Figure (cartoon, rainbow, N blue to C red):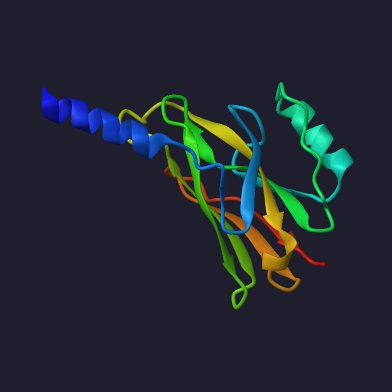
Length: 154
């Protein structure tokens, strides 16, 4: 019984979403809303406000200094029973990529139909590679689907 309790506590702890990391911060997230497996970049407050409305987030949208940040709307695939979790944003200047690395928050019983889990993430502009670069979603990747990306030309 103790082993089961420890396993459940560890699974719950592993499922927690960190609110920020080195060079990024989650502004908002919503389950089951958004274009599945897509990446959109938002460069101004009006675009963020519109995305906030589309995602039906109930709090007021934050004010973002778009001179210092860009907002990425990342929608990886989770499942109805297992939400996606943003593990980190990886910056690779040499390869000119910014990768949102995702996993499933829980890993048991994740066979339900795929749904998009939307994340609005502020990314520090000083961490971005020189343009052109690509913003990609890495994992989780259901069978038969490839991960989304967006190309940044300027």
